[in-house]
Length: 275
Length: 275
Image 1: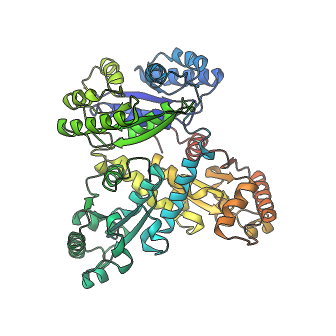
Image 2: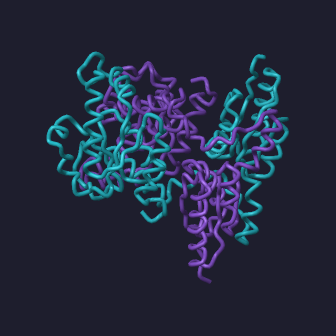
Image 3: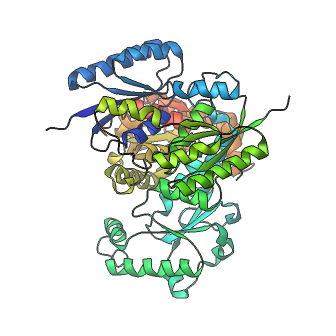
C-alpha cells in the first residue's frame, strides 16, 4: 500500500506560530502518517480568507485527500469564510475561550494574534535583553556581569551550549552565559576561576563521543581536536570535573534543546515568573 | 476594586512549551486580568501528578481563587490524577485527538511530548545547522557561503537584525545572514558589493529614530553613533538605499521578532516545507 500524504494548513490572523506549535504536538501523535505542512499567516480579512480557501481547495483537488486545518483565527466573519474550505477544521481558540469566559467572568477581546502588540511590552524587552546578554556571553567571550546571568552552561566545545543558551534566552527570557571546558581546565583539574563562585547556577552539557567526533570532524577534519580518542578524553575529563564540583550534566545527544532548556528552567527554579 | 490575580499552570508530560504557547494565546484574549504563570513540565507519572496537584491546591488556598490549568498531558492515568486539582482544567490535546483519529482512520500513539525523540530527527538537525549558520553569518562577519542563506537581512546597527535572524533559524530552520548598513554604504549610495547579486532574498529592517537613539545610548552614551541626529540620518539613508534596490523593509519598533519572522517567511515564499 502506498502511503498517502495529508496536507496540513496552519491558518491564523497573526503569525500562525501558536497554530503550528499545537498542530505539531497533535500530529506527533500519528507518526505513521506523512503530513505536508503549509503556513497561512496574517489571514485577517474575509478577502484573504477566501484566497486561503481557494489555495486549500486547489491542493486538496490535486492530491485527492481532505486537508486538515489548524486555525487560531479569532474574528467571526473571517473564520466563517475559512470554514468553507472543505477540510477537517480544528478551531484551537473557540474550544477554550467559552470555558475561560465563564471562569473569569469576563468577555474575551477577540484580540488578533498573541504576538501582536507585544513588541512594546515589558516581557518582550526582557527577552530581547536576554538574547543580547546571551550572545555577548557566548563561548566564554566575556567574564563581565556574570552575576547577572540566570544560568551558566559549561561543557566541551560543540556539546550544544550555544543553541541551548539561545533557546533559553529566546523562549524564556533567561540570561545565559556559556563557557567551554578546555584541556587546560582538565590539566588543572579545576573549573575556570571566574565560574567557581557561581556554582548554584552552573549546569553542564555532555554528548556522546561518537556524535562529538562526527560534529567536530565536519568542522576540522583529521584534526587532533576532532579525533575520536580526544573526544573520549575530553568528555571523560569534563564529566569528572562536573561531578567533583557538583554540577548536574544533561546529555544533548538524545535530548533536544527544548527538553534541556525546560529541565534547566525547572532545576534552576526559574519556573515561576519571578526571575 | 482591587484586581485579583489568577494562578495559571502549564502542565505537561513533556517540556510544557506547547501548553504555554497556546495558553498565552488564550490568556492574551483577557488583557484586563492579571495572571501569575507557573510551569510544571515533565509530569509523567501518577506520583508526580499527585505532587503537582498538591502544589496547585496549596497556591489556590493561599490566594483564594480557583486556578486555571492548561494541560498537554497525554497518558490517561496521569491525566486522571491531575484532574483532582480542583481547577478549571483545559485539556489541549483530548479535544482534538478524537476528530483527528476519525479523520485519519488511525489511532494516536499517545506519545509523550512533541519535543521528545526529535533530537535525532532530520528536522532537528536542520534547525541546529541553521542556528550555527546564522551565528557565523551574524553582523556581516562572513561573506562565505552566502548562496546557502535562505534570507539575508540588512539594516542599520541595532535595528533588530540579530534577534530576528536567530528566531528565523530556531523556529523555522531557515539559514539567515545579516549585514549592517554603515555610513560608508550610504556615502557610496550602494549596497555592500557582496550582497547585490542576492536581491531576491534580501529583506530590510528599520526602526524609529527615537527607539534607535534610546537603544544606542544604552550601549554608547553621548557618542556620535547614538546621537539623535545621526540616528535620523542613518535610518533615512538606509531606507533610501533599500527603496532604490527594491528591498522591502519592516519596522521592528512596533512589530515583534515573531511577527517580522512570519512576514519574511511568507514574503520569501518559505511557507511550504520545501526549503
